[in-house]
Length: 78
Image (tube, rainbow, N blue to C red):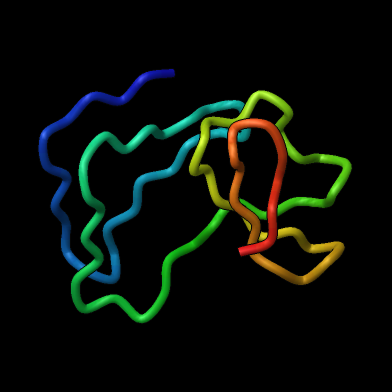
């Protein structure tokens, strides 16, 4: 799935963009979260880490209870 848009706007906190587990949302510009109390991150186990991640991808590892970032070759604690 590919989502190409210039701007996504909605009424906080009711606006949601949801992707299924095999989709990727690639940001090629800055991401602004104004007046938000949280952002939902992808969550999964160590074994469920995507091996074909995009450099800069972030996720929460529920086995290790930490946020990780993909360096292009491995997942690293943030």
